[in-house]
Image 1 (cartoon, helix red, strand yellow):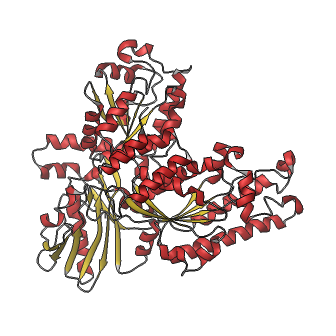
Image 2 (image 1 turned 120 degrees about the vertical axis):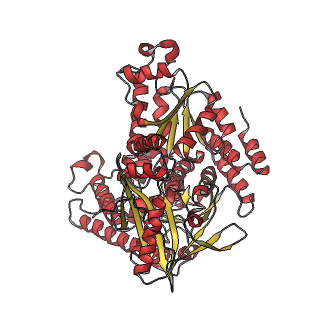
Image 3 (image 1 turned 90 degrees about the vertical axis):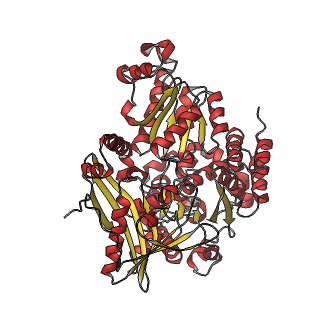
Length: 622
């Protein structure tokens, strides 16, 4: 067995941070123990400030109970996800002092995310521990729900007034003990129904505040079981109710939100075929001989395909990397009645006998996404190891030996989880098909301008509003290649700019002859004394290469002139990934004003003599 701890240390010492992350991921998958969490934390603590490959991430933990024992696992899983987690935590039970006081240490810490972790026993003893002290049929229990709702609303409203950072709030787990026993469900205000009412109230309160999200703590406790989740002795001895062995699972749940908020959600799932989407080897067993159908083990592969199909419908890009004969694969897709996944659901197929790492590189290039945004799932340990070694920035899932465990293995870390599902997310598979059609038409066109005109593109440029806020924030968090500054913004931060008359916050949608691409671009700019200063300028990779960026700049020129301004300013902050956007200003007549030691360049355009004009092949609605 590989000594992952020694490998992690060696890779960190040599500066191979991504390889160290791969080993750390394997270590914590195989042995998610307290000693390994502490080992990882000690390594992270020893890293110098600003260590490359790790993004600083400040987490505030505000709780009704003692939760400090989670620190090691949060820092360890943060490292696996490319985050250097820094934690602020006041003493437990300091919720009001931390959140209601705008001058509190919580707000001075300026967290990237704040977690409000609550247990029902702490906040609502009337419902949990002293339930039988009151008349369970009395209407005063309804007043408990109303009071809780009011208190929670005051907390999140005060929090949002003090900061624009995201807030995560636990919902409430069901009571460990049903005080009325099996008759609880018969009571007009039984414990189970009261907790359900309280969780409904939490959801309603949070829905009214921008960038506040609910952690389904109740589902997590239910998943692992109350008897496993809680430590009765530590609950009474130290007000630390969560068993030490469960804290890693809670940290993993938080990581789903951290990835989504930090633009680290994975975009593409690449799958093997033989013994992955079906049992057996089609080249040897034939279409009728593979395991895929109503009876086990074929039913396990059908279930796995259903989970993959769900991801496709959530907007995850699907691709195939398989060592196989293309004709055999086509026969399965075309003729097997239990194939849930159709060939057209896959944006790219690499079916040949070359190394899987080469297939993955080609898929990334063809889809214009970074390898770090891809997940590779395969049943073969040798293939998984080859990919890990050659492409350490890519996430690899080695599927278990039993196919009934495939679905859980794929879903365990929530690598593809997002905070919301937009129309663009749901239609992403279709959008990539449209992109492929457009690329085919480009190959057949005589020149670029003919291609642009043949596309019949229609632009919709609109201010960010409540209906587009989540999508605009999502694009700032996920877009890397055509993104001039790569600054990530939360919904709350965008909402503040929407309300500020000095700011312009705009979304760009594109429709072409193949269909509606949805919202693909975001621009934000602030007016100053003589010009409009561009803060954010980004465009989805799906429409790169269509001159949409020229139309976007033309709109900003018009917006500046409408305000009586004579300049358009911008800057480019270079990253490893935004090479395609770095020459935007130079290509459109801006003059370079400065360049610092980090390569950050500042640009200006004189609107009195050289504004950018809307290319005439674009159509605007109305």
